[in-house]
Amino acid sequence: MRSTAARTAAAALSTLAVLLTPTTAHAAAGPGDTVTLPVRDALAALPVQAEDRTGYERTKFRHWIDADRDGCNTRNEVLLEEAVTAPEQDAGCRLTGGSWYSPYDDTYSTAARALDVDHLVPLAEAWDSGASTWTAKEREAYANDLDDARALIAVSATSNRSKADQDPTTWMPPASGYRCTYTTDWITIKIRWNLTIDEAEQTALSDILNDCPNTPVDVTLAH
Image (tube, rainbow, N blue to C red; front, side, top):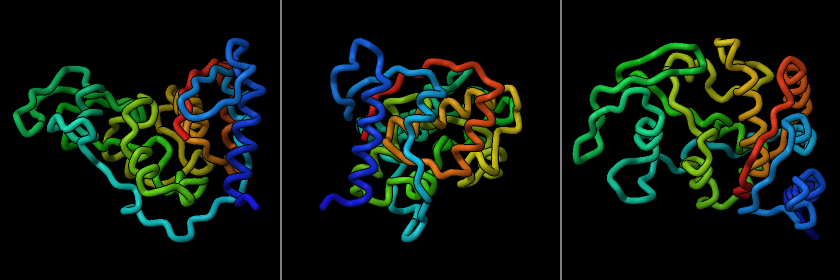
């Protein structure tokens, strides 16, 4: 008999297959496939399931790694990619100078050390909504996801630490103008990694989207 997690994953992929763009609607959606759908449909495609944090430890998500062995770990790769003004980097990928914009709180920073690289959907939230059943390598891939620019984001340490591991039920970015983007990206990352949402989260996301455009989202499935 298949596990509950396996049945949930299969149901999610089946729902996605129905909602795909016409060019891919006749194929089952799976890892590596790219889907396009309005954000409200994306939210509707997410399976609703109670969360469970039993057994969670942050160390079960290995990060920050240097996947391409270029001397820069995942954190620094994000900082380099998102810099408004490019920093200088030495042979050890230590960054000096540069500037960054933190959309969570609409602030700028000129010091890399003042920034956190946030998992937009926190590691604990991922664990609660499906990652507890993944392999260590799958969790490592999630924690270092550089293939979707929405997964990891450089923000002020102050805003990131106020968020901690909260979901949109209890925390939204202080910068109100960013909240539609944040909500859309949250849903997109959950679709990308085949994660679930709980009922309170579904309600909160739906309420926020009521004041947002029904933006089409493109996402390549990772799990």
